[in-house]
Amino acid sequence: MSSWKNRVVPNPRAKKCASILSDDVGCARRINVRNVTVRDTGDERGRGVFAARHFLPGEIVMIGLVQRMEKARAIYTIQMDWNVHALFEEPTIFSNHSCDPNLAIVPNRFGAYSFIAIREISPDVEVTWDYATSEIECIGVSACLCSAANCRKTVGGFPKLPPDHPLLASAFYAPYLQRNPRHFPRGIGMLAKIVGS
Image (cartoon, rainbow, N blue to C red; front, side):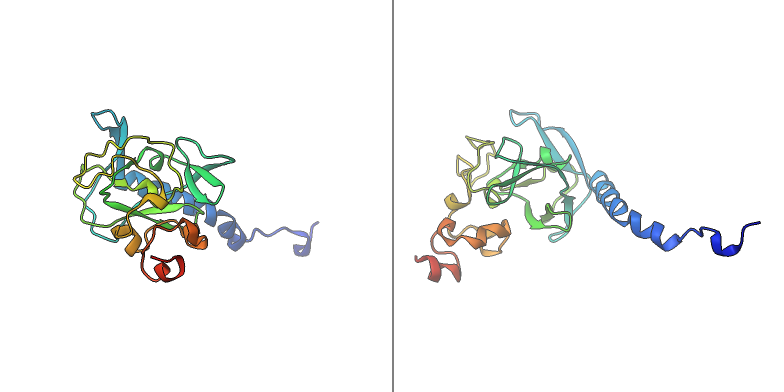
């Protein structure tokens, strides 16, 4: 006969704690499925990501999740830090560049970037971001195909952004770029005093 002291009693709290991270990632994936769709752009850019619903400025459109870290820059990687590159999960990996984007990047709790609306976005509109806000050097796109009125004709990298670029003024760029002033474009805000204008 076993006594109550020898019985293993399941701890429901421990079970919940063990699943929080996987539930959180699963929730992020469900949000992405609800918010956007991946489909062909109908032009030479291939696939792109399109809004599945209406978004207001400041809303999270996509939550980036890292599929795997890479040792070197590659065509589909996103730069996370100096010499740190990551391949993101779908749908983010299919998001296209634009010199006049409707999304900006912000760091998220998954060690990646989330993509927030910087202006109102209607359903079925392609959601894009400026690759130069995360990359020191962009090798994925040599000639820009965005067709925006303010197109730079080349994506370039962070040092090539014009000093009056609105994403710079709003600090919508990868945080690691703040740690090395020599890579900043000349004349941006308070850092202009450090870097020199």
